[in-house]
Every structure is written in structure tokens, then in C-alpha cells.
Image (cartoon, rainbow, N blue to C red; front, side, top):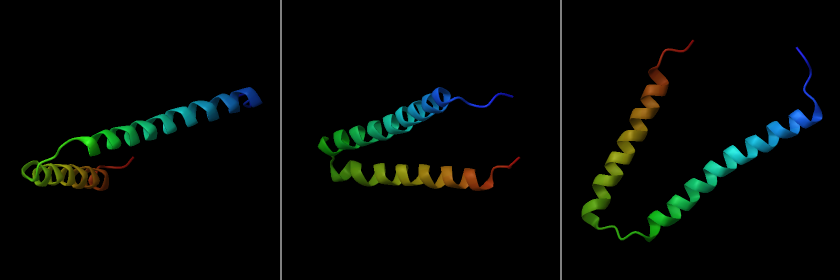
Length: 68
């Protein structure tokens, strides 16, 4: 196995910053767009229920999935 060169470490850092930062920028942009959409109260409660249920389900799956 060879040691990483300075250029290799730099490439890893740049790719990581672009990947993680790009996703966070995408989330922020989508959230800003969602704020501008006209939501009715009739839609808001079911949407929050679905989103909350999805988050609880994902958390339960991560907690209960077999590790290893």
C-alpha cells in the first residue's frame, strides 16, 4: 500500500467539500423554494404528518436494522 500524496489528499478534500456542500446548498435552495409556494391549511397538516411519519420510520429502520 502506498502513502497518499499531498495532491491526493487535496483532491479528497475538494471532492468532499463539493459533495457535502453541494447537497447542503441544494437542500437550502429547495427549502427556500418551498417557502414561496402557497400552502393551504388543508394541505399543511397532512404534509407534516407524512413527513414526520417518514422521519420516524427512517429512524426506526436505522435503529432496528442488523449491524454487521
